[in-house]
Image 1 (spheres, rainbow, N blue to C red):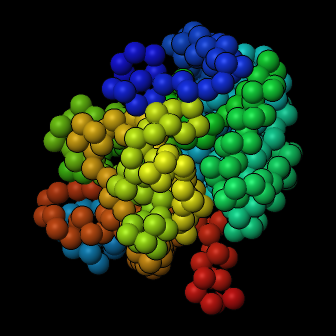
Image 2: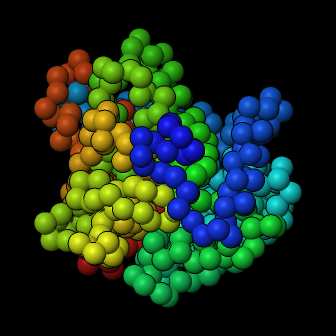
Length: 392
């Protein structure tokens, strides 16, 4: 990182003056608490006894046999409490909020998994919680809406703009601007103003640390490649970050190609975006020639976002990671493929990563290996897929 929250020009803190002091306070408190042995011990205990870490690194032997080529390993974040990687960051930030004396937590959510995780962590800490969720996302993720209410959170349905994740973040940031003295905004991805991209990355890097150690125990070495889906990019940066200095490990981020990048109906902000500022950070985003943010599309609500975390923009710029797009059709095919070969129903977000990993593995040799971050389970998506395919 270069400067105050910058990744070689990406990142920063592009926010109204009213939020500067709150973000500076958050930065100071995080820098104070994150290295503190007692805080680290409390967090590690919760990750072990509550979240269920470490999650397994599983060799998908039937998928590998079906595809041919490289061995495919799955980092099973779908087995973490609440069903996705989101709980890692949610518990970390909720603990941080508790230490800071905040009595209220707000969060945004797209697929609903972060909303569920934030509500879960807030219930654990005994802190009031409100979630902002777009009307379109709420309609396709009704189960997660009920789970948030069941966990005691207040769900605010956002009916402005595209009524998806971008608009949920807009409303959450407005709330935070007027209530930051007693509210902690629990951002769910590596987006937003500094220090959020760093905080979320640090809490999610447990994924990569575990995967690296597990792979060395299983195979005696490192994987040939890493693959993870990218919306804002928290599950992917969590896997990637501990491997960044291992030059022999190739890194692939998989964005949502929607109906096809050339159609304009997609969420591939790295593959098809340009430099701009959104939600307090300079990054890559999908915009028109006048800088207006365009509407996005993905079958996966958690990837339906017009920008990417600034560290991903940096990794793309330096070439350390390569970013590709998988369309809705490819993700749906992978959703079925993993279910049928391994008995594991992936989240539609994760299915994008599976789809690309299958393509990648088939062009590699059998003595090579790939770790795919299976960032979430697909229970939340079964009804949506069934409706899309006319099964119900």
